[in-house]
Image (spheres, rainbow, N blue to C red):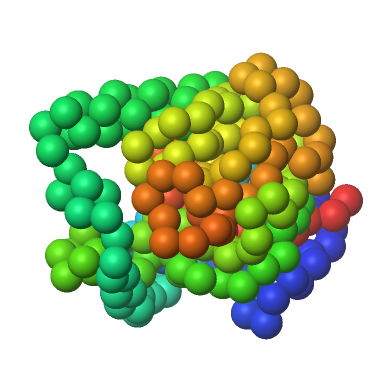
Length: 270
């Protein structure tokens, strides 16, 4: 069972209990939930079977525009089925206006677009790959201290043109500031030179959870490395499409972008 919840920020996570099923998390768009049932055999959410630890832990998350209501289904070893419904709170997102970006970073030419397509394929492959980590990720730390310079989910207008919503959390810090792994895991990608994202590290934490570190300067790890929470994986830079030095931090559950600030709000202790 989940025994203790540590509150890291002001917004309190919600706790739901039903027949030994425990769910802890932020039931907001962009939020994430950690669940447990000691006798779980199979868990499904939105018709997706979730990866389940030996102790009965699982996790799932909500996209930026997730619908209002959903449920999780738990099949027990006894054959009993538990279904718990819940409401997902709708969010209002800010509008972020950025000016002064080089035109090639907003309206790339044909050659640059080909590079962007190749980059996206490489990143997508890493995000969808299996990290084969057996230890369930029960707690998370902030990769670095710094000023928030960009919020998850915000509508973005770049040089006057509307672009895709912001998918992560931007933390401004000087070039060379160490970046720590939010949790232990396996390095799925450590590569320089992406067109928009610059130098990138992706960590697989197991159970379909990944964290992605963008616009880095130095990279201290390589693909396949097994790292611990708090290990320095590289340093802050301003590579790719950026107006200044910062870390752009993405968190994915499966291929869904989760709000990293909400990930930080709920941690589980044994």
